[in-house]
Amino acid sequence: MTYIKVSEIHEIYYEVCGNPEGEPILFVHGGPGAGFSEDDKRFFNFDKQKVIFFDQRGASKSIPFGSVIENTTQHLVSDINKLLDYLEIDKVTLFGGSWGTTLGLIYAIQNPERINKLLLRGIFLGNKKSIEHYLNGGVKIEFPEIWKRFRDNVPKESKQSLAEYYLEKMINGSKDEKEYFSYEWAFYEISIFKNNISEEEVEEILNQIPYQTLSVLEAHYLSNDCFIEENYIIKNLKKIDHIPIKIIHGKQDAICPLKFAIELNSKLTNSELFILDGGHSDSEPEIERKIIEMINKKDW
Image (cartoon, rainbow, N blue to C red; front, side):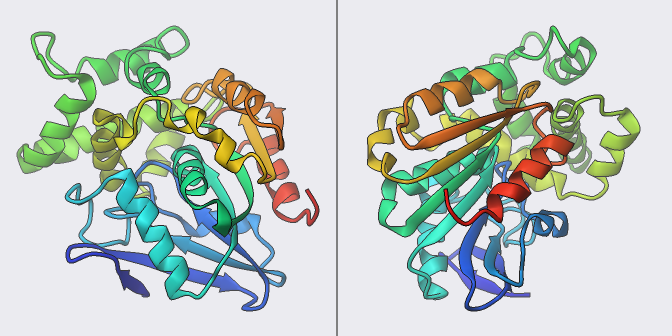
């Protein structure tokens, strides 16, 4: 197990896979808090590529597990620089999905000299409209029962937002409350992230992922507007206009609606948007195929 100490509190877990002399690619996982998995390695050609995987602060194998202390977007940007410096990598192609597109775009805006290309799947802009859609009923028409289950865990008399209430229970609740609210938060997300997913599939996925870190860190970041000023990404796109960008987005994405990917693409001059059949998951067949195609296409 390989770790790099990025602060007095945090150590992040990372792996470098593939050809040491190959094209350097940085994989930025979603969530926040999801961590990367063995399954994420399927997109790459390790004979030709050198791929850096890492778990962001508090996520999955990084320590301390699920910690929200000193855990903001700016901390994560700084950690990427520390990791690349430690590995003596000057410039990378960055591939991120979902929250990975948010962090990837913010990193590129602040460090454009370190980015060759951006491949982004399932755009999440981290602004109020994106957060509102996910947390305040944007999915209730299509998924009324799942939305009701998620919402009904918060008492009607609570003055806290939905995310704040869940976060409070996950951090300060009893052992049973921490587990219950972590599971319910993750159940909500996984239930709507892929077309026609069954409850059995949802439970199978939750048994395989570190949903406790996913849930607490998502609630932490979304309660705090992702620790960025409103529309930070859209306001700063000129800083990355020279970088080639490919955007892959599912037509039926319930978590991150297509309109946000269209908006991002419309404000860039060096990007291409692929709208494919599927939801938010990178395992949707068309989305998966397009990711593999773009990861392995040299010139774009």
